[in-house]
Image (tube, rainbow, N blue to C red; front, side, top):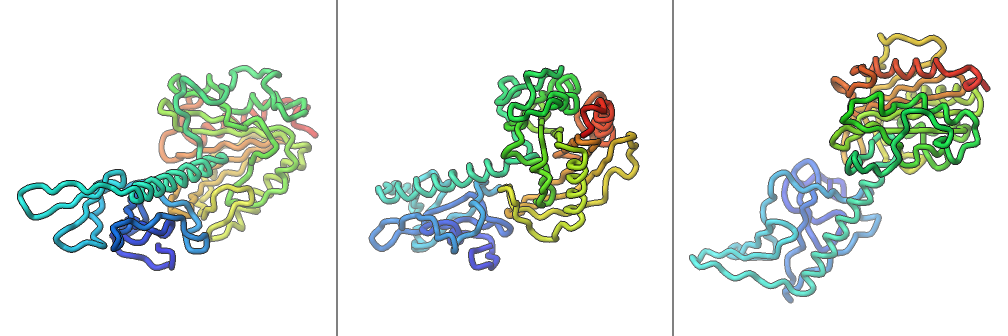
Amino acid sequence: MTSDGSTPGPGWHPDPWFSGQHRYWDGRTWTGDVFPDGPTESGALPQVALRDESDRPPVPPPAARSAMPPPAPTWGYSAASVPVATSVFEPWETLGDTAEPTPRRRLTTNQINALALAIGLVLGFAVVANLVARHGHRTVAIVPSPAAPLVPTVPAVPSPSASNPVSNDPSAPLLQRLVVRQPDVQPTNTVQLLDGGNQVTGQTTLDLCNGRYPSEALRSARLQVVEYDGGGSGVLSTEAVLYRHGSDAAQAMSEVRSVAAGCPNGPVVSPVGEPTTTTRFQAAPDASWPHVAGVTRQAYAFTTTDSLGVAETHVAVYLQRGRVLEGVYFPAPEGRQPAVNGETTIAGIAHIFEERIAALPASAVSG
């Protein structure tokens, strides 16, 4: 879409984010291919500048290049002298009809500065967009290498020294009994603490449909970990939470149910700074799953679509007993799942965590 809301045909069009350059529209979406506007009569390129906020789309420009090389732009030149841009990093090149190749044109200082500014701004927006997208549990972060984790590996055996550093809840170490652990997964995968995963303040637990959840202020301890495959992609996330009282955890479950039932059909702005998304719910996936006595369960299958049109499908399972709540998040729910204690189905994996909650001592979950 252009800045005025119209849909252009495939080709080079004025960049909706920056003045002084064109961006390629492939017929469905803008790509990362950009090209400075044609030279003026003086031979200099226009200066590339970020458009005013009211004149540009509210989302960062895309960083992805088009799948096929876009055609060369032809503005500002005669038909006998067509500029060819094989990439935004290569200089202008003139092709003629003679047998002898014509020499390259040298870039002026203004042209070099304009190209550098355009490239820097596009890459900067891409980095910011990536950081925002990685916030929260819905899009699991990718680590560079399991051999050199960025965050501590969760120990296999609960340790009081590894409890929530900002929590004074004496039962906080018990949360390590609930989450996925290294012995649960296959040897090629690793389980790691999510950045900020053992903190309550400033961290989000409930964000289904970007709803508002007053119960977030009632949490007393939290532990979220991620299982990464051999390529560094997150395949499962589990988040165990303690609330001050059992009624607080029950309130959280009620809020999830209410938000899901009233989720709007259009985009919803996040109240906690996560990306704006449109959420579409499918049928509840747990109609035939077995239940564990004493544990309340709510399971949701849904697709989120961000403002750039990127759609992702998820399954989120919420489990509650007393003042304990656990979220089990499947970022790629289609087909066979990486084994957890030998279970490779979402129903079987969720059942493992239901049983772990049921096995907690009553003194830890009452209150």
